[in-house]
Length: 405
Ligand code: SF4
Image 1: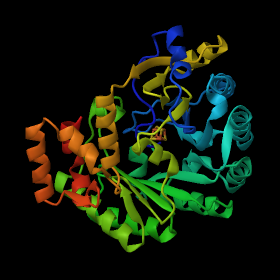
Image 2 (image 1 turned 30 degrees about the horizontal axis):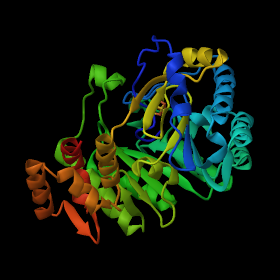
Image 3 (image 1 turned 90 degrees about the vertical axis):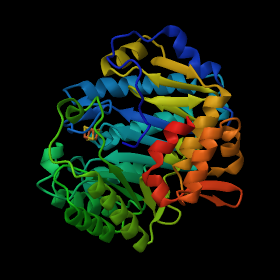
Image 4 (image 1 turned 30 degrees about the vertical axis):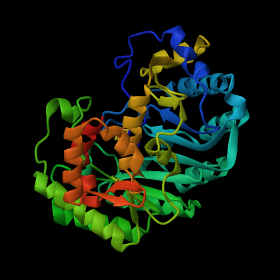
């Protein structure tokens, strides 16, 4: 799944959803009539060592219980007082491993969404897939159901690294899944890779990057490994991580190879052929509004950010009780919104209006001096009436974002 899709809040699934919180989306009408919808599917066949997402092994009957609850949640979201005036421009099924869903179950969920919301005719409808859980037949079913974009979690093409990550596919299976997606008619196909992995050197990374680029994906996401506290590796540690300079070299190797293949580096971790940027993820980076469904999913409407109950049994029970499963919510102040819009916008190659940055620097002389240093080092550049980070700036952006918040 992509970054920022699922947040903390109710981390142990122990706290009951507060009935009052269920009114958060109802009482915060979106300022736009165009929204995205993120749907979280909280199951995987097995947990990967580096993963801190809200997911658990799929047990017997759990998918059916989840789907029943998801349909109820879509009904409740569709009954919000402002829902009739909005149109969904994107639907993103993330996880977890959404491709554990049978094609008919996915079709039923999308039908339910279309029954309760106006979905744009040209809506981008994405499903995240793991290679071992797809077949051409299943992906054809997804396409017939209306899915027009697939995101394939390849992560590595090294058969000695993949099992160590906890992945269930090998390099051959990854390639076969990519071909199955194309044969199933997928014309908008993204591949996820990871760098900075234990045991991954620059030669191995170069081989993986070159191989995947030769497949000619329409979109490529590449994330550097981070050891999050909620992951198995974050708790226990992991040996064999490449040195920092090696990780930097891996970042540049990909950036240059992607450019040579005509892919635009349009966000820190994302590359796309012209016209194939992820429309759904751009909603996040533009700090635009989106609804959330599924355990732990996070939404943003009006000035409210909210997150669903994370534990799937409680999520199902709350919906069985007829209540939206909102577990936490926060009203963002205008200053917080400005900070978020700045940081999210600076993740992208388009950057942000210079006036936004100027507003943040007003009365902050120390920060202004540091920004000037970034400009002098060509990490941040002016482009007309906008400012943006360069690729070198992307690499160091975390330090800047901490200061801008
Ligand atoms: S398949 Fe994806 S969501 Fe599932 S455990 Fe692995 S990284 Fe996490």
